Length: 280
Ligand SMILES: C[S@@+](CC[C@H](N)C(=O)[O-])C[C@H]1O[C@@H](n2cnc3c(N)ncnc32)[C@H](O)[C@@H]1O
Image (cartoon, rainbow, N blue to C red; front, side):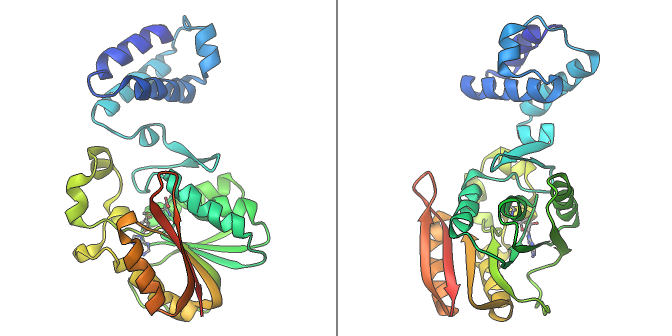
């Protein structure tokens, strides 16, 4: 079977489910990953004969895509801030709006600071920050041990020095360290919001990374602020990713917890998706 034959089979199998542009993107993503064929090589060599293993992997990918498995879980990686991250079903697939949260911190250019990432997942926030902020010290926590092991793998791959810890922010944590900066993209989806979520997210991404308990969207923000009371230094800064519908509530919560200079920022879709505040 040539790579062109595969393209025809790929389109035939998936065109009823996936639109043309996305199909094209997925096709190139797969042949690049499994056969190391980029777009130009494909155009120049559509008659490339697939090896047995390549054919098997590509056919298997069709079956997984039919079940709506996210491509990132199929190939086991994704790009975040131009860096390649390993992902699996234990970690959320990093989102572009989270890149914007990271950009905000990079713009502020902290120097020599202790930075904590709560709910690190794949480690995308801490690792991408750490690659640019070389004189800062990083810790990254998650409640899920499988997520911590993915984050550690990514940190090793990118040669970053981060202390990863298995910690549950729901508990009262008494810790010797105080931080200058806390960053988090916590779970904030309620079970009521489930109806509006795509099957791709709902059936494949880890529920522990998405959902709050008891339909309380502010649950994790409250826990993070409680932890910040003792463990974020005075004049320390907090950066949080939020759902656009929560901007007013999170702002109020920060205000009531002795934070000032509260700033909201819109993402590339012009939605309020991140907030920054300074502790008094
Ligand atoms: C929305 S995901 C964010 C992952 C990653 N930081 C990112 O931006 O792609 C939330 C993360 O919080 C973690 N988490 C959920 N409950 C937690 C808890 N009680 N304590 C610490 N981390 C928790 C999840 O395992 C998940 O990795």
